[in-house]
Image 1 (cartoon, rainbow over the protein chains, first blue to last red):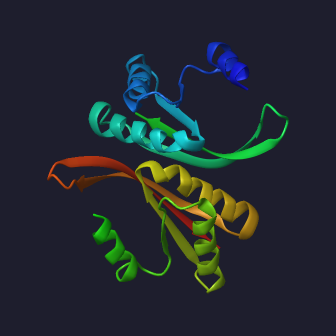
Image 2 (spheres, rainbow over the protein chains, first blue to last red):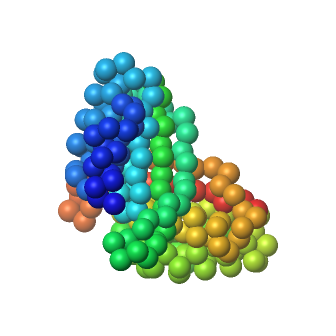
Length: 101
Length: 101
């Protein structure tokens, strides 16, 4: 799973998606701001499990302090199924927040 | 702050609002399901800070497993200002998810 994610991050993720992990929120805010500064018209913030709260922090900080002409155009909630290392499956909630400028 | 919350819970909260706290998600799922069973047409799930992730869990579990004819009609993200015990202020992100049946 970790390997799959790493691979995704290096290759398949479109430029304007920011995946939220365990780092401080400001790291991801910087990523979002950079995308807008590089000309992106919209940036998608994705998170699952415990990092969902941080995704909302990233959206709020970006919109209120750094890209004040951006707004939330879409929020999607979903469930994803993960396969654990021992082969069992667990469900985890996910969020996808689209910011547009 | 804790006292203020306790007071709110006992008096001022409308019947169809479920505030997410630190308990297991299933406690809040039960609260939401009960509201629908008591005839509520919509239930608002509110959370802030770290409990935002749990709010999404509660929405997903309720909608996928218990009230399968419900759907999300609205999701709002915001920032709230809290006054700490020492008088300083801090901002915290908040979410409000409306489920309708």
